[in-house]
Length: 321
Image 1 (cartoon, helix red, strand yellow):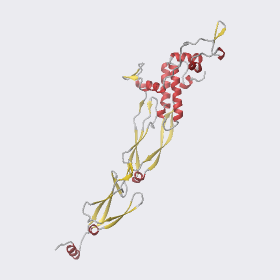
Image 2 (spheres, rainbow, N blue to C red; image 1 turned 90 degrees about the vertical axis):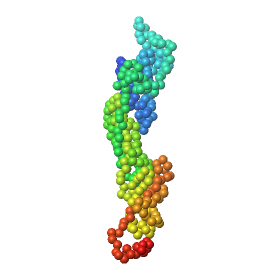
Image 3 (cartoon, one colour; image 1 turned 60 degrees about the vertical axis):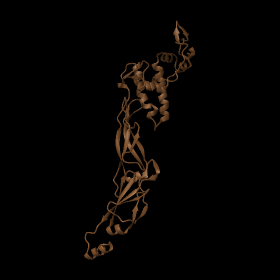
Image 4 (cartoon, rainbow, N blue to C red; image 1 turned 90 degrees about the horizontal axis):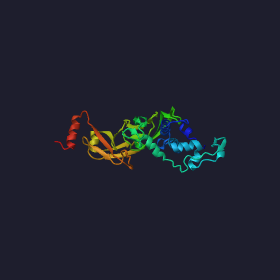
């Protein structure tokens, strides 16, 4: 017989149309190539085509009759095998070759995606399949599952690779539910912001009749001890004395990636003054070679008291009478 279509769909030889549909849907949900993008894609494509061909043959009365009488080779060649193949029958005690049920028949297989669309979406209208079956047996996708992924500011500055171990239920090739563990690798790109979403399609739990949910990780940013992020900019608070605010100062700052910056402050620092250092902020994710700005916000520490002599000197220096 060649290929055993009944075994492929895991149904018996008396399977009804409804049995065939249920078997096809169950297996197609497991082996459709779109559900196996990251693992065993080649195997999935071959299995999906095999499942579709089996359903195509067994769900078509004429194809099924020819297949049952003569097997796969005769079905595809459109000619019954010779009686020596053992697939003839006895009539009046004489071994004779059966005649092909339809000598004009030519095997024309349906497209696998067309079959899938008919039974999972394209084949129904107004909530019903073409044969009147309700869509309650069609596959519906489970709601997405979201999880926070906590990242340090350094992770988001330099980029990082995080491996997440997940445990989920899947349907195996026999349709049974089993639990598997997987390691998902998440590539954190430099410049990603809080709220960025990373989606792993259909990596949630699988259940019969339900397409597995997408698994979504949402970037969350841990507070940093020195820097605060404002969009693509980094903000740092710097305290200086009143004398330094008036006469100037050279600041030394260590960047997130460990470089030392020497920044001269030459202007008089007034309340609310910010010094901007270009291209020393966060990387811009869509333009990796560019960065935002580093903003230095000053806090002037005023002396708690001044002596009479200090006050007099200040008045003289600052032009007071």
